[in-house]
Image (cartoon, rainbow, N blue to C red; front, side, top):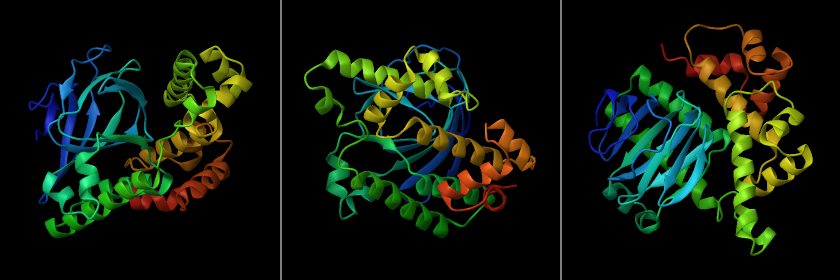
Amino acid sequence: MPEGIGSDPRRKTTPARWRVLGHPDGILIYEVRCIVENHGWTAPAAELTHKVLLGRSGAYRRRLNGRTSFSDATSVLLTRPGDEMSVSHPMGCGDSYTCLEVDEAVLADRPDGARWLDTAGWEGTSDAPLDLAHRMLIAEFRRGIDRFEMSERLHRFLDGVLNLTDARAEPPGADLARAIGRRPATQVAHRRLADRAREVLAAGAFSLGLDEVAREVGASPHHLSRVFHRVTGSSLTAYRNRLRVRAVLDTLAEADGRPLRAVAAEHGFADQAHLTRVVRDHVGHPPAHLRRLLTHD
């Protein structure tokens, strides 16, 4: 696995900054920030290993085995060898993610291993506890831990990811086809509308009101709200807050120690107290405590 800047030499990918965080037996973990040179689709490339990809910031589009989806800081993707994926970056640079490459033997040793070896991938979203565990894992690896602890932490984290996906019999939006019957064109239109709203919010438009987001996507607020919930299983407000909290966690992990009132204003919160309340509701800790947990310098 390369470390530095460029495309992954094992398969043609978007150029990026790659940083390996650890490679204990059976699991490789690294972080990636894409460098966009072309906003169009990359050529399809076959996956070589079992992977878990966890979004951290930004957004992009992916086409996995012919199915096009929108990926953002809430996204989780599981792939297996032979899956074909291409990506595009209509919003430009800024997206980053963490990748776990898991050896087949590691999955085979699990009680539920057959499922993960035989299933053609899974895509969904991470909840707030898993996202915080993800970010704390990165902070610990950057600080430096020994190989034994690294291996145990990765196995426990992998358990958390697979348990989350296993608990969801259906991905978000699985009821969409049932709700609109045999109208595939309507289903496609609804998904596109929801993805467009996700793009607007993922671009950092946290200061926009619902009416403004609706105008951006060419729909009424009522129609957008109803369709978004049906497609994603989440309200627009809840989705916006998940993105905002993830963006705040990114900021808190930086070493500059920006005042919390400035962080609140930057991410569209009414004031510092509002920031504290929303962050605590999502991840169970106030921003000041999270800054101590996540700062890795």
